[in-house]
Length: 62
Image 1 (spheres, rainbow, N blue to C red):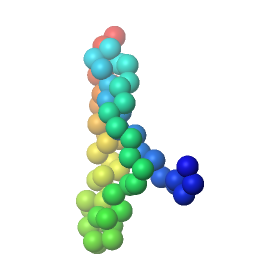
Image 2 (image 1 turned 30 degrees about the vertical axis):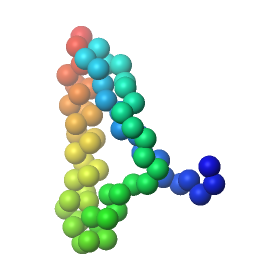
Image 3 (image 1 turned 120 degrees about the horizontal axis):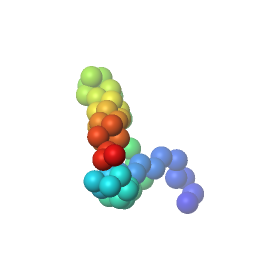
Image 4 (image 1 turned 90 degrees about the horizontal axis):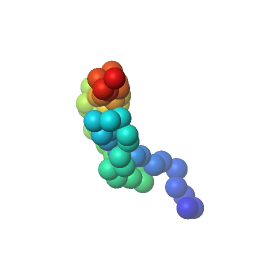
């Protein structure tokens, strides 16, 4: 697609560890926090999903 530069995927994990696509977005809206000088909120939009993903990975059934 012409002009497509940023794509975000929301992916969930089933209890068995298999990924499930929730949705795909073509524009990242996290930058609106930074533009509003809400720097802590902007940083958390990166840290929270990564931390949640790590928590899910650490708690996969053996």
